[in-house]
Length: 417
Image (cartoon, rainbow, N blue to C red; front, side, top):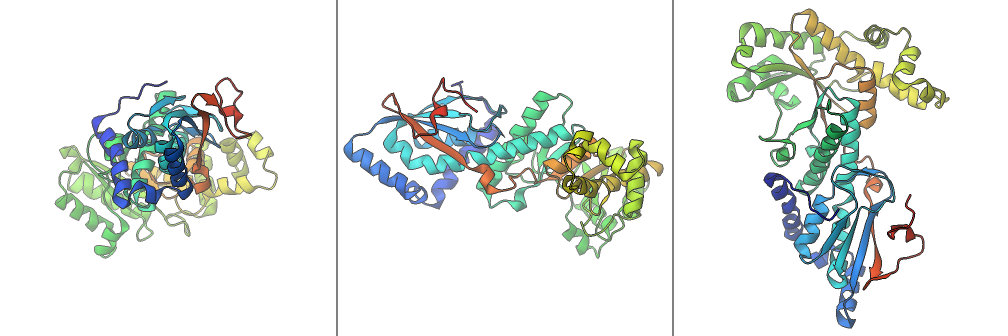
């Protein structure tokens, strides 16, 4: 498990920037916790020791450890690292992920930094893995950038999504997984080329609220774009604008003859139903799609009978009902748009959906067979920071096993949870 995985050159180069980003802020002693700096000074003054740190997390994750490993090797080049899992492996809670052996004086100084780089990509990878497995037929685009705190977080999160996607494809070859990023910075994690994307709501506002005009401006100004995706919720006329833009693309501009593809993006505000739907119509739409009558029967088919029985207070059921039949980007709204495009003869038109596609929403979308071609999401980010807390404990000093009471499971040969 000691061998470092071979990464594409661009991926490796991006991860190596993390150390430069850290150093650009201020020197390492100013960033680490003071008690680690104090420890480093004491050990240096009274005799260094060769120590082994064990790193683990308190929740299940998918291993995405290369950001941490590359940072450690950059700051402590003579360190020895033993991996207990490879990139993309599912790691149970409180299972040792790696051991780091080297100078106590040097490693103490960077403990804070290495822990910062461990949990975030691993939890992001776990969430991305679950999302890709839930909707295997859809491609995913990483759109987390605006929810991040800057380049460092963008790199950690996007790398985690790429690893989670890779793990999902390995588990199920039918999975499309993540196919791109909204940023040039992180796009190489998902394959060749730069960032993806067509238009935000701001561009439609610029045209006075006319999505077709925005689409024409996009096609004229960015002729190299292979896909034109109309963002159709600006005026609340998702179906009308989808068909209007499709008519121009296929029948007037005939852009399909240039090898371009057309699609729509559904991003309907969570305070209203998509054009042509209300709650009752949404229930009927999903029911006909699945061949099931009655909203609770639909929920039971999607959620599973056992899950329904374990939810006597309808907490989960109500959330599932909102995703299936509610306002915003629901299963019903996606089916509704797909049927409208098909009936108009635009069966090749793709549907991209965004807005809150976290692991749970993806599970429901997949179980309901929502006809999605792509999901734009940043909701693979950890839901809470406490999920991302990684822990490192020294388990050996100059070869002698020693650790605080309660962490004996980190010793090799000890039972692990």
